[in-house]
Length: 259
Image 1: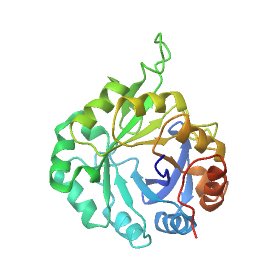
Image 2: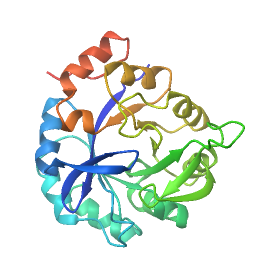
Image 3: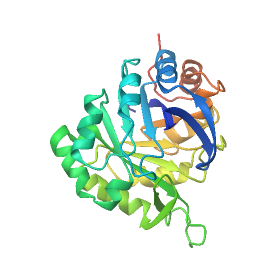
Image 4: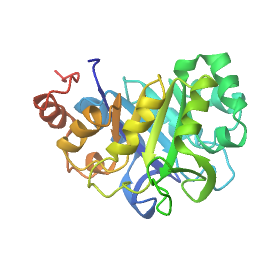
């Protein structure tokens, strides 16, 4: 089994890290650069910064926030939110990002995946999917729907079908967020994550619902995810990345333990 990654996520609004429950009830969590540095030093394998209101507000990514954060860390750094073109991606890379995450813009124009991948390489393109179970469907998991604009708008697109298309267009990874589990700390949606992981050949990053080490172990083993991402449990001191990795390793998950 390949080594699994633990990723710390920074949801940023107006230059500050925030966190909510199921994409609402947002509270302040701190400074992006400071939190990124803290999580990287504690052993996070990667940092993801998502400018969560850029698309909804119709603006570009906060480049200065990206630049300040990139200067504080030494691990792979992904940035998403407000990236609508190759030029937008180039600006984020110039500010210090290693990868970009695209969501709403990829749904609006799937060719963007190919354009960014063609210029910067598939490894630099993550397609983020905000997914909500279709509760009225005969199979709510298989029928899960893609949402955009920070989880505000349904698209009518099926999650598994969109993940497959993203892969076929050259995405290097899928960042799958369960909107139903987001911020609840009650566990990742292992069933949905496993379906997506089985549907594509590229790595799948699980997001939404992390509350303890067992939740990470479950989604990395039962959910077949290649990586697991969390935000609030790290920001608010509920879990330390170093201790979390040690516990996950005891569950039989191969992770890179910090020195």
